[in-house]
Amino acid sequence: MRIMLIADEPTGVLWEHLDKSILEGLDLIISCGDLPPKYLDFIVTFAPCPLFYVHGNHDDSYEYTPPTGCDCIEDKVVVYKGIRFLGIGGSQRYKDGKNQYTEKEMKAKISQINKSIKYRKGIDILVTHAPAKGLGDSEDLPHRGFECVRQLVDKHKPKYMFHGHVHMNYGPKVPRIINYNETTIVNGYRYYILDIDSSQFNYNGCIWDRIKVWFDRIITLNGYFI
Ligand SMILES: [Zn+2]
Image (cartoon, rainbow, N blue to C red; front, side):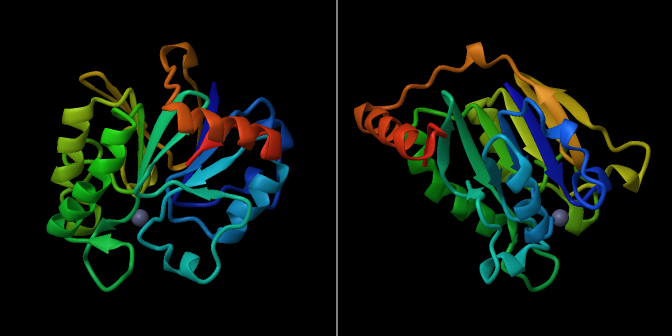
């Protein structure tokens, strides 16, 4: 499965100077946040696949003008082509904003999401805006990762974690990829395409999920359920 990550800053080859060849063969696009809704609208119009997103700390405008034709996967486990995706948006709270959380607030948010994880019997790919504590974050409060998100990774051991928020041009030490235990962590800054071996994922869901997929395939040809 070919996935394109986008995050933090629009890039000309996906907008003003669109190079459609970049979108060819993609199975899924994931926005890890901090991107204008119009940019997501534009990309999904030309893409051959769905676009999932979480909110970045600069995405408060989505409340009034959400990206159209895209799916928000925040606070729930979404299954697409047998892969369980969990989305968690936002960053550490450093000023007012709808998509900023204290460690305590994020912990409470995750405890609500746990029901969804339990129902799907785990997660395969975690999509966040901010990185987990100590895994691609920085020391300053705005770019500090959440400890509770790291605990989530430790507990559920997703195969992949995709995030944004820490721009790779902040310094030479910001890595694109970190291998942490069984999890490959990828910073989606600007855009990054990766191929994953989808044969390792085969979540079929419960009978109601399968019925939903069946209807969804007929109606949208997408084949994913939320
Ligand atoms: Zn951010």
